[in-house]
Structures are given as C-alpha cells and as structure tokens.
Image (tube, rainbow over all chains, first blue to last red; front, side, top):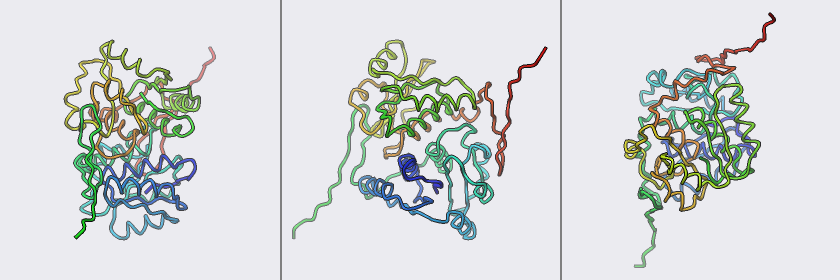
Amino acid sequence: MRIGHRPERDKRITSHVCLVARAFGAEGIYISGAKDQKICSTVKKVCEIWGGSFWVEFVSNPLKLIKNWKNNGGVVVHLTMYGLPLREIIKNICQDGRDLLIIVGGEKVPKEYYLEADYNVAVGNQPHSEVSALAIFLDRINNGEWEHLTFSDAKLIIIPSERGKIVKEFKEEKKDF
Amino acid sequence: MRIGHRPERDKRITSHVCLVARAFGAEGIYISGAKDQKICSTVKKVCEIWGGSFWVEFVSNPLKLIKNWKNNGGVVVHLTMYGLPLREIIKNICQDGRDLLIIVGGEKVPKEYYLEADYNVAVGNQPHSEVSALAIFLDRINNGEWEHLTFSDAKLIIIPSERGKIVKEFKEEKKDF
C-alpha cells in the first residue's frame, strides 16, 4: 500500500513503487487517493509486455482497509526509518501463510499508521527511498526468490547477456482453419 | 554514476538514487549532464542533518570518465535488466580493493555503456527502477553492511522504536571560557 500519493509530484516515484512491488513478488498495490490514470496505464503496459496479473487499486480510506486486513487475519508491516531494524525483526514477522500488507509512505506519514501496523520496520535508519525500502524488504521476506520469478503470459522475455540486449518474443497468432 | 538525468522529469528519481547511494555505502555520485542545483541542495541538506561526506559531481563527458576509471585500475559495473543475473555474477565481480563505479541509467542507455562496462549486471530481468536496482546491488556487494553504517558527524540519530519516532539530537555549542 502506497499512502500519500500526490499525482503531480509523485507520479514517477509511485510508478517505480508499483514496478518494484510487481518485480519483487507482490500481487498488487493499493494506492491512497484519487485515481491516477497515468499510474494505471504505466502498470498495464508493463504487464501486457512482461506478463503477470499485478493489480492497482485506488482507495479512499486506507486506514479502514488496514483495519479490515487485520480483522481478516492479515499481517500489516509499515516501512519507516524510525522503526525496528530489518535484520532483527525480519525473523519475528510471522506470516504463517497469512496475507501480508506492506505500507510505504511519502514524506509525512500520520501517527495512526505507526499505531495500526503490526510491525514498524526500518530498512536502515537513514533517509533513502520508499522504492529501495520496498525492494529490500521484499527481497528479505522472500529470501531472494524474486530472482527466479517468471510470468508465463509474457510477450517478451530477456535472455541474460554479457554485453547485449537479447529478447525472446512470443507472438500470438490466429491460425486459419 | 547516474546517466541520462533530465532535470525536470528525473529530479525526484535522481534524488532518490543519490540517497540510496549514500545510505547503502557509496562515497559519492557522478551525474551526467548540466548541474542541477536542486539535487545538490537536497543531498547537502541530508548530509548536514544525517552526517557523512557524500559528494555529488556533475560530469559533461561520462564515457571519458569511465575510460579513465578503468585506466586507473577501477572496476565498472552497469546495472541493466538485459545483463547477467546478479546471483550468478556477484561472486565474479572481483574488486581486490579496486575502486568500483556503478552505472545506473534512465530509459534508454546508449550501446557504448554496455561495451565499456566490465560487467553488465541484471538485478532481475524485469523492469523496475534504478533506485531499487542500486540498493539491491549495493546490499549484495557489501553483504548487508549498510545496516551497520553510521555517520559520526550526524546531528540527528534515530533510536529504533516499535511504534514511535525517537531521535537523538546532537547540538554544537560554543562554550565561553
């Protein structure tokens, strides 16, 4: 969940948050605030080419969603430089197969999020970026599994290369009978 | 080294790249293009409060700098989704105490960078962000040491907290004799 998205100022940062969420294994993203068509179309275009069913949903009442998430047995993590060190707390974040909601904020996150979160986690206690904080957290929670992530419906797949750009393209074709 | 910085469009992404570089242990950043005062002042403000001597330098000829870097014995890594998988190549990136230059680009990186780099490294073969790619690469190259990074001249230090914001403030005072 991305909170505090301001369409003009944040459109590229929020787009990057979406792409990181997708590439590092999240199923989808909630964004608080009014629907920002730009973000939706960026993500849609990426999924059309690179595959997967990553979803984007804009929510008007993020705190209510968080409370419902917890009531339904889900776990809520809030990433903040003021929280407890990732290396220490990661082993305590017990999912037991429960759904995980990860909150990343902008510059000023209201107190309620700190209070509602099951865990306030610091990806370092230095200022950096919600983009990198989310990537490192997802990396740790999934033990680096994102490196093996594939999307079966991808139209393009990269063939790793030492010095070039090699892509494999899958074309859909409608055969005549 | 951040290449392809466009002041209007990229100012926040490039700022985040700078902050990630600093927080994950880099000494400084080269940015290709005309001097962008906004980036400099963002980084300066962060260093004044949170410490360290992270530097920002704008360069007009990044390829020349890369060639000089290699001539002086340094190693050059280019982060690109088209490169070789991080998990496989990280053990081959032999620094032997040599200076490491990490290149992150924008949307379209010219061919020359792929050819000049000692290693083209993919932090996953999915599109995400130069911000997250840099964070994950620095995390791996430094074995997570960034979590223990401290800046001795910091004016503010965060005391990790379960649910609050606790900071320790250091005030400089000039005592009368």
